[in-house]
Amino acid sequence: MRMLHTMLRVGNLERSLQFYTEVLGMKLLRQEEYPDGKFSLAFVGYGDEENNTVLELTHNWDTDSYDVGNAFGHIAIAVPDAAAACDEIRKRGGNVVREAGPMMHGTVVIAFVDDPDGYKVELIERD
Image 1: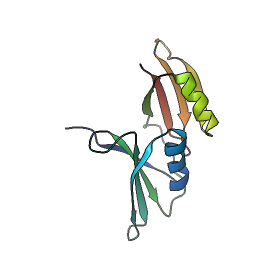
Image 2: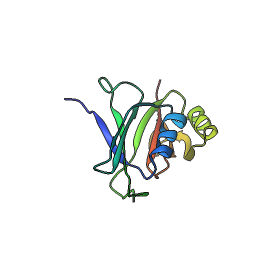
Image 3: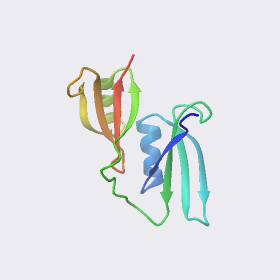
Image 4: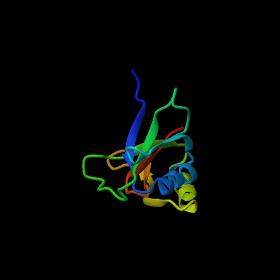
């Protein structure tokens, strides 16, 4: 067994695709339209679906926003330099909500950014 994808419901698919591809540097792997169901799916990630876990962005055509809720935590992405990643994300129009620095009660360097729908994306500094 292996993890395939995590699904996020998004209010505006184009805005979300712009964030995940242009701001975070993921690739659009595939996109499907379901007119009878009035929804679209877009799969994004850093590698192919066969060998990597990806994000499924689901856009229900009649819904333009969602409550993030208090059960979901965040998406985590490994980066070689969290401060540099924050600078680049900011330059690309992303919203850094926690600057790079050691995590509370630890030494691992992390940062957080918000996606367009308010989902948290954690950047974890790794070699």
